[in-house]
Length: 305
Image 1: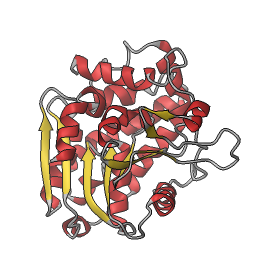
Image 2: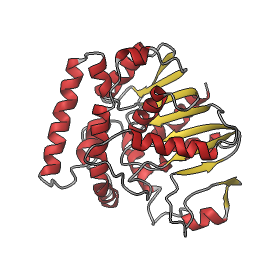
Image 3: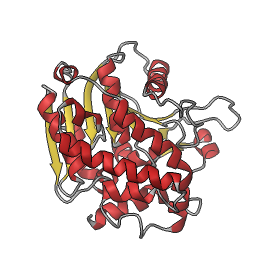
């Protein structure tokens, strides 16, 4: 794994550290940041607010990944909010949102219904198409929403979507076996209450040794999210669609991976490129799985293409 990838994980979580000069939720609700209005959860609100929004113009909806937050998109949104209405989704169990209630039988509809509700609330013109962007597990959710067809999507951009169900759709037995072996080992670690078992996921996607150098407060912050991540793996497996469903998805789609990424992530992007008829693949040199922050400028250039 490249050094840039190590910096990405560190940067994404450090941005949320209380030791940094971050704007608090109450400050966000009371002020504008860089002259851009940000709406988040009201301090006294009893209902969770599953989004942050900035800017105005044509809407772009961002979905972060597992073990992550909306700060994943910070560098990118700062630029795009100058000309677009940027909506960053907070996934269940992340960003202070309540855990989902489907741990016993995970269903991607939990995420999809939240996003559909947010879009219905925030998009001023009913039926206005959106640009939908997802990273990692956020890419799994974004692709599932596109396949569901409940939202009008003008463009879809997926940064290393971990949609491992695609391997079954295209009968890639070698990659299916690699994923299954990892999941078995990971869940065994969870059952054994292994210390920092979450690190297995970071090392799997980011490269061996990616987790170890992270500061303890980052590692400790990831531990409570392990149950949600395990649920995400279940969704990566069971959010299955027939190959023909991919072949019929004609939304213009950008598929992005890093040249230094896990071969599993690269294979998912490769298969999607072959199956989605209106897609284009981009590879960012030197980037790994956490490319949306380690290589934000390159990712922004691809979004703007």
